[in-house]
Image (cartoon, rainbow, N blue to C red; front, side, top):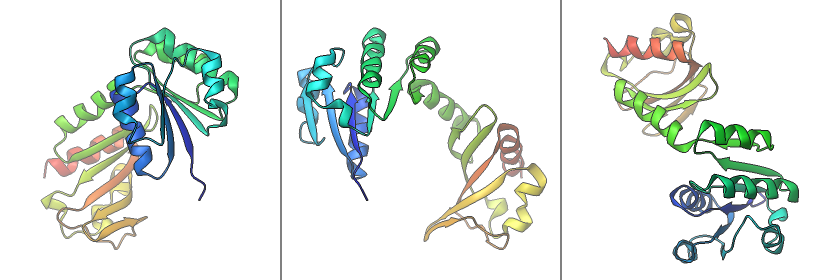
Length: 221
């Protein structure tokens, strides 16, 4: 499989976290930041690091930004620098550009200039944590759209030993169990005969309301 090459602009907590994980997943990563200390910290972690101002077109040309498969603009609170770097990556022809937004307005501007994906890390993490706090069986929560959600639900004692046919989340609530993470491995597209066990984790997809009803049902037993 061809290694994917990423250029990450901004090596703060968000950018460095993405960079470390991309390296762990076997990709090549060039990290760019104006802060020498941040660059030095990641110099032995990422494939390459550069101390540079990514809001200057000649700088991005000189590091060969246009040759990367994906550009990630992870600049923190400097919205102007974020927008300028994003525009330059798009103009240079980077195949895919992903950018961090610190506000809804910032995100709308990024969308207008053609970003492929806008990420709101603080907002999205806040939503996920809030759902985890109010739902004891909810381990993770990802909003796919305004209507649809994918969630990881720990199997409670009341469902232990029951098959999916008996639980019947699709028939009763309209949501579907698309995988079951078991101690011995993950079961993709489980059948109605698959039996739930203690410490299993169900991966459920459905509308927000459907999953909420399912959560409340298993949490109240």
